[in-house]
Length: 207
Ligand code: ZN
Image 1 (cartoon, protein in one colour):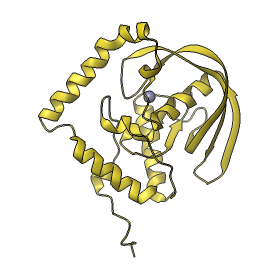
Image 2 (image 1 turned 30 degrees about the vertical axis):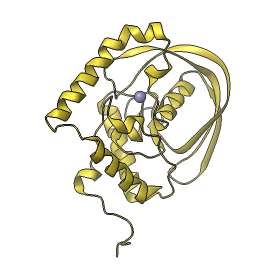
Image 3 (image 1 turned 120 degrees about the vertical axis):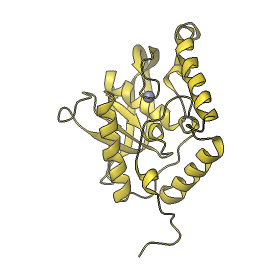
């Protein structure tokens, strides 16, 4: 029997899709996950599918409208190659040095720009088995971890770009904003109240 205190997700809520800037869930600071169930594992599997379809190397839960501290990574971007990693409740610490690198984002398809980030970090998170994973890492993998970690804090990669570099892509970013606004007017994009209710429901179930 279902626990009557835990809301039931609708079929629509169980089917994930990538949301694009400036959807409000991308700016929501996700809460830690306290419950891993079969549905959450299914969400992770859908996130890998969406990531590969979109030719990405990482995807954070709030990019698929889930306000939870979870992201998936495969730095090869190819199914069957490299390693599929799913991280829950990640923490980053002890940043060292810094490096500039080109970044893009599945929530801003086609937009790229240089972002300066720490080169080396400590990273820890739980995997789907509930095991604590702790690593010291650097370079591209550290960059991908930081990009996805940022999403869970409501931070987009262009927030971290220098003003001159951001000004180079501001027209493209604004195109996404204009498009979202017109889709809201036609009812094709969710209004703020609907997004708020959805976030509250997922937090009730998982946080
Ligand atoms: Zn991204």
